Amino acid sequence: MHIPENYLSPSTCAVGYIAIVPIWHAAIKHVSREVPREKMPLIGIAAAFSFLAMMFNIPLPGGTTGHAVCGTLIAILFGPWSAVLAISIALAIQAFLFGDGGILSLGFNCFNMAFVLPFVGYTIYRLVRDRIGGERGELIGAGIGSYLGLNAAALLTAIEFGIQPLLFTAADGTALYCPYPISVAIPAMMLGHLTVAGIAEVVFTVGILSFLHSAAPSFGIESHGSASTTPVLGLILALIVATPLGLIATGDAWGEWATEDLAEMVGYAPAGLAEGWEWTSLMPDYAVGNLPEWIGYILSAVIGAALLVIIFRLASGLARPSVDFDA
Image (cartoon, rainbow, N blue to C red; front, side, top):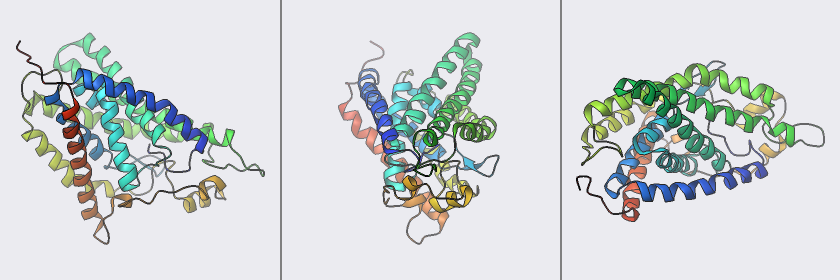
């Protein structure tokens, strides 16, 4: 679901930023008001779950790949506004440092995965949890909410891809940016997410939530007292070590092909895509120099997770003072 550079027109990308900037502003206000200072660093750890989950590429029908996001998981633990900031920062690190997703398209990537996904997922989670009750209701709600949240984000991504050839064409009628219309983009995107990627999102969300209930029940905004982070950091470390499994899946995610690969598929290279602006990332595709891919993947996972923890620990200094829950 990471929309690459130049698959959307610059004007479309501008709309994405116009939409997401006020959401970021609202998220900062909500989080600074609702999340106690001592809980703020924990959001960075939860954001690391999202960053790492997105590194686990899995094969989808049609020969493409997909990944989980863990947006509903973060919303359940710390609220949907916290999820907006956590996933947005994770996506920004991926785009700027690793070239995963475009800089110009970051606005829509954040709108889809950091805003729509956690809010849809959290809303469904609450409805199911309140109806069923108990831990069983929480886990069932988390599963249903995460599945629907991921697919809502995928549907929006498909629409954003699909409107490009409708709105932006060259004089000869060829598409300037993404060449696939809505009639192709929606079925192609949704097939993989309704079947495999949605299930992966459920597995990550319910699996991690169950682990936290058992090993770190104080990890979350609604829990009282200090949270033990040792088991959670142990899980983060295990996920980091396992990230090279994401290299097993071959092929690109739908809509994330290189220009030359797309040209072979459709018979031409869309001019706006071929001649568009490109960002030169420091570690493209999570590679580190000439090191083996699996080592680069693990080092990238360490760097990404560490940056998220550091950023939210620094942000804790700007959060409201700690509150006495027993008062």
